[in-house]
Length: 289
Ligand code: C2E
Ligand code: MG
Ligand code: MG
Ligand code: MG
Image 1 (tube, rainbow, N blue to C red):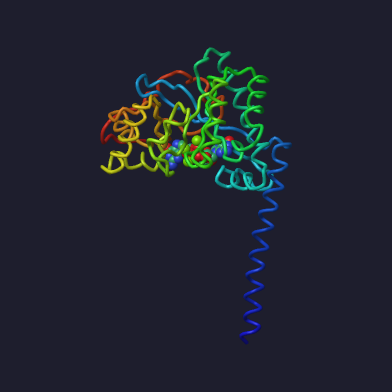
Image 2 (cartoon, rainbow, N blue to C red):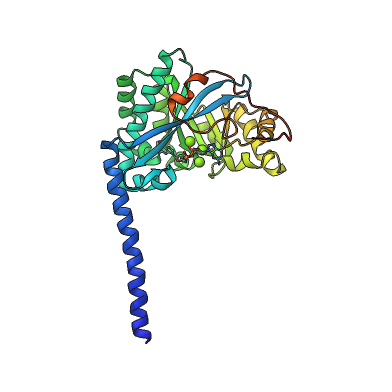
């Protein structure tokens, strides 16, 4: 019967919806408790200067070891924390932990080492973000110049006028600012000069084919040329082989980050290599590991 079939389908559909909603609620509850239970931790992915081949900084990447869901990566939970507002508390925890780590490294003889923290649009829009960061910097005793904040291109372009004001306030505190996933948004390159940023991170989708596609190589070259004329540093993310490293080096890219050089790792695993050279080959058509 069409009628009962219809009802059956409806029930099936609604059970699936119920399941999704229940999963979301469970995930949100687990996230809520995650902070108190100390389930979050940080990995650090090294960043190297291509001129000296030395490790000059690291990006801070959030990890969640959930009692209920196991090990979770940002793609599993960040958007939910943004929708629920939980990103504000979690983001503050990330900033405080990263600043403490940067201060420890400075005390261990690496005052120039930079720690880069991802900041969500929700955090940037928060009324007291600048005041909160000020507090965190003061409490942790970190030198603000060793802290970098990463914002994605789309977050920066959204409500650009207000963003510029906030970024200027952050810049006045002495922190460094970078634009993440650059090239994936819709900003005109020329518009960039209005933003007080120090560094552009070229999205890994352009890096992936930089040695195989003339188009991608041309885009990367254009970004680097434009950045140089605006006195901005360029970091390429997602470097996975020596071929890409070679091309980025030839194109004049300042800094690199990616699995070929090092994967994200706990802070103590990185300690022995702060300020050291990567020792990787930079070459055309070489066999990679
Ligand atoms: P992102 O800021 O673009 O971070 C780089 C991502 O690329 C990381 O994934 C990193 O593990 C990965 N990656 C690094 N090198 C390579 C490579 O050579 N090849 C490939 N295929 N991938 C590479 P992860 O850790 O899963 O983070 C994903 C995204 O989650 C980040 O993208 C960032 O937008 C967000 N995120 C991470 N931590 C935080 C945080 O504390 N707060 C906020 N708001 N967002 C965060
Ligand atoms: Mg990032
Ligand atoms: Mg990125
Ligand atoms: Mg990304």
